[in-house]
Length: 216
Image (cartoon, rainbow, N blue to C red; front, side):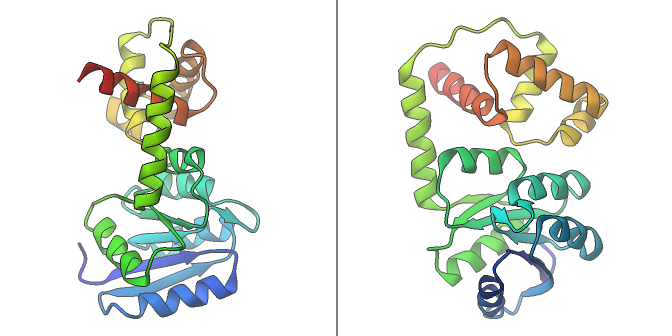
């Protein structure tokens, strides 16, 4: 971890940004490198200031914080993102994780908990708010008990791509890892979702989690 963790705050609400600045000042090893009020500004701000961690709202003025997270992670894999929001919806949580977020904190968290999360993520860790973790696990258990999925067989390469999708890797990161073009990976992901009769990457990740739980 760097001696000083440089943080960018991205939230459409000025009051929230001011509150976060005050909270981050409590820790001498954390500094605010940049701020943004929109998705486009967050993406550009991350490119220009190269923060270690971005603390970002899920819903920004001009778009989705989750899509901004994905764009930031694809351009700068070393930059970590913590989604900071009042939304505990499990689909949103799964989408954030699959977009590359290293943490998901609710705005009910204490300032100390957020600062601890920032330091932990900067060190390479990952963190979910306890309430969020409970929701996601409940969803996986419910889905797992609902039905036994019948799927078309995946090729070996598709299974490899699926495993990386379940780890929250972006298409760009998957392409680099298995030495394919990003477009080819995108085609593989589309084929996988087709064969699994799914529409979202988060559904595929949940499917992998259920399969792994079943195999244990």
